[in-house]
Image (cartoon, rainbow, N blue to C red):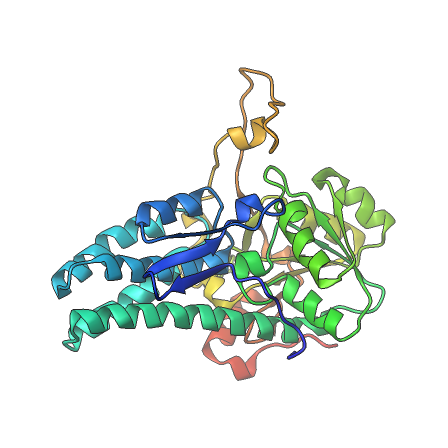
Length: 368
C-alpha cells in the first residue's frame, strides 16, 4: 500500500495561526481554494454550506473545532470547560445525520475533561486538545489505507463499479472510504472501470469523485442519477461502492442500516435486481452502536439546491414545492458487506458488527 497516495489535504490545523484551514469543496473542480479561520461561526457555516463535508472529515472538523474553541478561550480551566461544552453543542448540531461530527466533538471534549481532572494548566489543556484532534486526523488517514487493503480483494479485473456522491479524500481524508479499495486495486494493476453518478442536487459525484479518480488515472465516467438502472444493466456492473454517514450497530435487526447520500438506497435496489454486490466502506467511527432508526434525523436541505442549477438557472416553476433530503437509508438486507479498517463484516450485522468492535481478531472475512 506504500505506493498509493494522495496529495490532497482537505483539512488541517495551522499551528502558526492557531486556526483551521480547509479546501473548499464547493468550488471544486473549478478552483482549488484554501480557506482558514479561527471563528466557530465561520466553521459552522463551512460545514452547513458543504465547503467541509463527508462523515470522516466532519469528525476531524468537530475535533479541530472543539480544539479551536478551547484555544480561543481565556486561560482559565472553568472558561475552557464552559466554552467547549456550550459551543461544542452548536458545532455538533451543525449537521444532524452524520454521526462523526458529534463523535469528533465528544472525543476532544473528553480529553479536555481528563486534562482538567488531572489539574493541567490552561496551556496544557489547549495543547492536549490540539494534539487529540491531530491524532483523530492521523487515525482517519491510517484507517483509509487499511480500508483499501481490506477491500481491494473485492475488486477484480474487468469489474464495472458504481459509486455515488463523494467518499474520497475530500470527504474522508487519506485514500477515502469507498475510493480506498479502488485506489489500492488500481495500484496493484487491477483493470476496472468506475461509473459515478452525478449525485444531484450538488453533483458531488460529478464534481468531486470524478475529479479525484481522474487525477489518479482511474477509468471513471460520469452518469446522471436516472441513468443508473439502464447503464448498470448494459455495462454489466458488478458492484456498487458507497461510503456512509452513519451505520447502525445496535445489536438489533436494524444493525447494518446504512445512512448515506440520497440515491444510495436506489442503487442498492438496482444492484440486487441485477445480481451485483452492494459494498459499504467506512471507518468504525461511523458505526453508531446506540441509536435506532427512529432516532436518526434525515437532514432536509434548502429547496434552492433543487430549484436552481449550479450555474444559477432556475428550473423549478415558481410556486412548486421541493423535497430535498440529503441522505437515505439502505436496509442491512441490501448490504453485501461493510469494509472497515478493522476488517470486512457480513450479515447478520447484529452479530458481526458488535463482534468486530469488541474483538477485531474474530472479524468475519469475505472469501477472495
